[in-house]
Length: 331
Image (cartoon, rainbow, N blue to C red; front, side, top):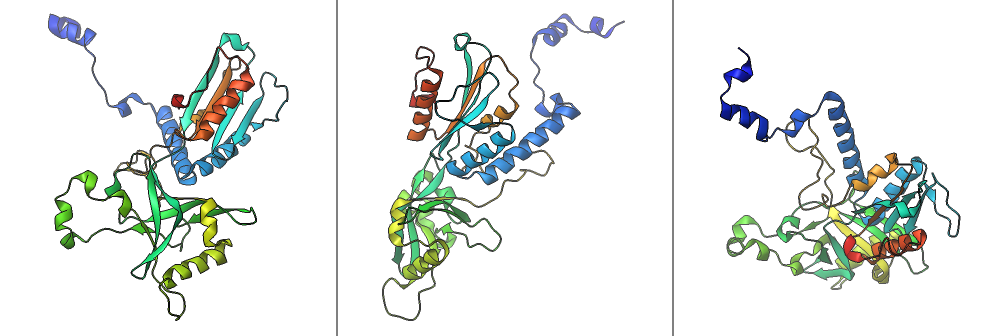
């Protein structure tokens, strides 16, 4: 007697009609599992290399050029098969593969964001209080503020000096580099703090970055620690305090990406509240196989004006107003 005949009518219907959930890993064969491992490894490399929008754009351009993309020359005539990109002020990027069909037949358009929750240094951030030097910050993105205290942080960004020179800044990533932190109360001093709700444990005004405590020389003065910090910045980056006004400095998590859990599977997220918001979807651009339709990928900040400018540029280059209208909320 067959197995089917041994089943009751209800069991047969259940097998035929009811959806049975399976663990995702059980659905992968060996080849798919290897592809997943490679994808996650690339994702972790991307997250480590691109902790700011500018770093993400630089990394993406490197991948694109290795895959045959070239910078778009304004006014040039594009032909089917061309792969071009447009770097918009180092903060967003558009990549395009020119297809064979008319745009009237449609286009494949995808967008990804490269911004992530972080602490930005204010324009005049450095100050001294109780013989400690700090930098004032304001947070970007939907963060849980209490998660940003007492963890090692790194400083990334650029500084535009008086002479117009743009100097990249990356402190806290290399071996031996100093790292930064936001202070918090010790457990035995935090009795009142423990009674507060999660949203009020740490206020935005308390997210000030501790940067140093060693004073300059033996001279008298109320800003010796701040002066020592400025001396270090001048020696390393050639900047003065006024250059903070034209700087874009971002404080982000130091931890490199790693595999979570004790298995050998790649759950490639740095941490829930830091880098997992950076989107990896644009990286499939280098493997586009559709030769017929025009394909566009836009990577930008979800709330940055540069993303809107890229969309406007895309609107101009395809010259079909009824197909697409540039809108910030599409990101």
